[in-house]
Length: 373
Image (cartoon, rainbow, N blue to C red; front, side, top):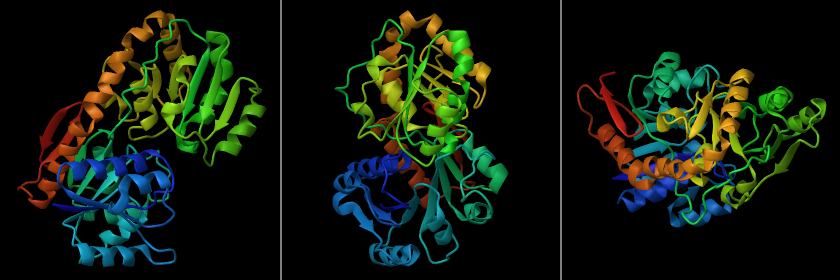
């Protein structure tokens, strides 16, 4: 099987980039002839090293669609997998002389999504895709309802090839310090958290928040911290080289307050370290975790639920470290290459050798639910 993974960009170290690179490596390990085409340079050095000769980058100033068509003509992939669904994939979908096309939708596919691709371009292109992979079990129904997608859908978590040697979080006494990391952008919900801190302190006592990462919201957050009177209690610590290089042992919990999300790597990274997390249930996290001792779910933008979740966590704080190993086990069992890659290969085979009627597989928490679309 020959598969070409289409990336609109690979210049950052975000979740979609990490998933695409790890998937390519996992596919190759499974015997699939997989390579990556990047529509726009530059490519981060980490991904260049990870992909090596499997990486092809469109030249600066060249139409990425034309470069992709030329590459496809030479290499003749049986299938192109766009991670994520983006502009070049939408343009490719309009062509008749192309391989079968599937895409990864990194959000929950709901009306909350504000990305530029969500609109007429998505509605026009998506029905032409043979299949869609999503991280959240909410996404297939949302994509069908909002954009008329009726093809094969599979829900699989991101690949998490995390370092085993990192010790588990083991704090027994609270510090009053919370942490978040990742891209600082509107949909991640950090403005909501900063604006909620005064309410949280009235119920929980002194609290501090450290935010690691950069992004378009960073200058806005800096102004918001000052306007809300949170200087000294909220620290914007900037980009970090690796989430596992962060000293997380001094924090009580990780916050993942996204307004819309697929399945954020920050949540998986927190779980891998054994750190308690408060995460919005709009993501794919509830598909993986059913035990309330491991993490707590809230609705996005709900101050009362956020305060209650933290009250529950602090009210039972001395036992939180007892669940650290179970948190890591969830990620190991659901997100390891042996758990994800064969299921993705199965999706490819079902698209390349369609049944009648084509099944729709919703895979969440290790279960398959097949139905005719």
